[in-house]
Amino acid sequence: MIHTKKLLSLSEQIAEQIKDSLINKDLKPGDKLPGEKELANEFQVSRPTVRDAIKILSSSKLVITKPGAKGGHFITEFDPDSFVSDFSDYITLSLSLKGITLEEVIEMRKMIEIKACGIAAAMRTDEDLIRLKSLIPKIDSVNDSHYFRDDFKFHRAIAKATKNRLIMINIEAISEAIIPYFQSTDCSSELKEDLNKELHGIYKAIEQKDPKAAEEKMKEHLNHFINFIPQFESASKEFRTS
Image (tube, rainbow, N blue to C red):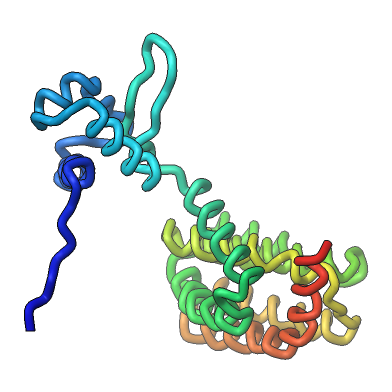
């Protein structure tokens, strides 16, 4: 069987060559690309073809265009916040359009956060411990939606303690996408007490630098959220129609 390969247009070929230069470190974040005329001469193509290549790179957020006398086309600087925003928006839209389900998001959250908790236990600093302890929600001082918001801050602090930027980006994006679904979620005093005991258990395992125990404690904590899925579905409908 013959496997066909997509033929790239001239502009796509130029974009790929510029990507290769970035991967090979011939170009680095912040570098200014040559002008359109110079690129057109270098690649032996028209300036509109170069512009199309720049558009391709811009849509991939690999190139940013700055106006003015000192402007031009620049290789994008790494910005974790931009990744978080894009990924969070993708999850939010996919949930709204039924492209993915809440079960899938929660399953992904468990897969990442359980392992992240073990890594945090191995990598944490004294500063991380101080931050984590301060972020355990206070049961009597917050309402339900604020309680969950504080709970998410604790989870983000665990991600930060891993010192792994990809883990931080993923956990931050997932948190941003699903926090709105907690606004209409009921959390009884008994449940808050259970959740807080779990958070204290997670903290203790991280404090003791015990990755296995930390993962087990996080798994136990996240299993609670499976029971919230019916409420999430209801909140999802309210969120989409509000």
